[in-house]
Image (cartoon, rainbow, N blue to C red):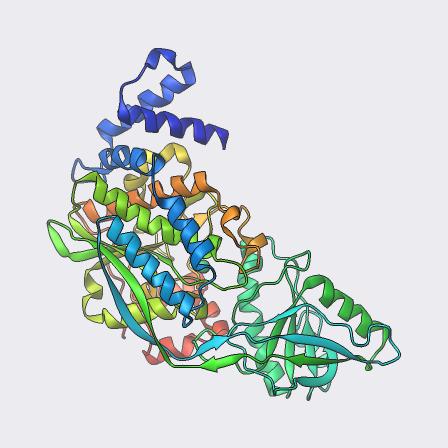
Length: 525
Ligand SMILES: [Zn+2]
């Protein structure tokens, strides 16, 4: 990490002047001469001596120098705060995005779509009501409603609690009659990207079984330690979920589990989720644009989501990358050179409800999808970028490596050919458009994921700036190279891709498969 910083400062300085090579250490002069050699030889494209090395040299001092990005992010996270799609805070965030692009000197519009339902948590309460003989009776447990969970009746649900362990099929059968019960499902502490995927992939089947067996509600054991509360949603279509659900602070959930084990069949709870449900409501994506000079009707999208959950202030997820997108626009504009193709800078809303905003964008731009050349998404906090997830493709890897060649010493070129659901590239991928999702080090992302602790102070400002250079160069390079970075895949090619990457299984688990099969979502057969 220190090496990266040293190399970076050197690069930034070298772009301003030929400074004092004599004062540099041998390793530093070596790095400098490598950079100069790279500037002379690197192209964005195989057929054309081009702009990527020059662009990198221009972007670095603009982004790494005096920049409004961090103050922009502070305003979004501290002053707008948590911004759930459909709430007044989301409207303020859209205004923040529009103002950010305007002051970057970039054209900006907002594009409307309809969110099916609005949702707001009420005063969630979870109380142990029995056994009366236990000293724990009347104890309150720390809990929050899952997002887009239905409300309980006004005075709550009073019911026995059944511990279903990890919620596997075997555990659910072993638990017997679940009718009218509040289920407690366990989870390990999340520490890897795989754990995070499981937080989304595991619940749908448990929910389906709970509904089938007539359970009254589900409690999810918190996957973060130290009583940290967080929420996301298990309803990924913007509609209200099928059964009341809450996340219980890990330590409280484990206490409850021990209480159930010590008092078999006797522990009861009262769960109140007076959630406020309204809607439908008109929402907006924010779209900044720099028009290309040669092929203005062809576009490259650089995007992040502007919405967040509201227990914290959505700084890591995904405020820092919303600020990154605006900063990349400012830097490309400030270079004073236009790209061949148009670059669109997208701030999506509705991501946390199941990529509703990006899905709406794809639907409303249906007529121009042949001309959207690529979609680049940042949505994993401020950990160092190691490369991009190529959305199940390998045909785009070579061109991407050429584009990022000027940053090869940053280690940002270890691309992966995987594809997964989880952020705003999804509907573009299903349309066959090349997508690039930044692979980032976990850093402190998971520890604060969707939690009360996702706040401005968690953002690694230095890494965020360096990631912005990577993002800006990627968008620039794809927009400015002579050839498109990849073709639009056909439906049969996508069918193969989904199978090869296992994205088909994820889509089945998450409930998207039928829409794909029916031609309601993704490229038409
Ligand atoms: Zn996110």
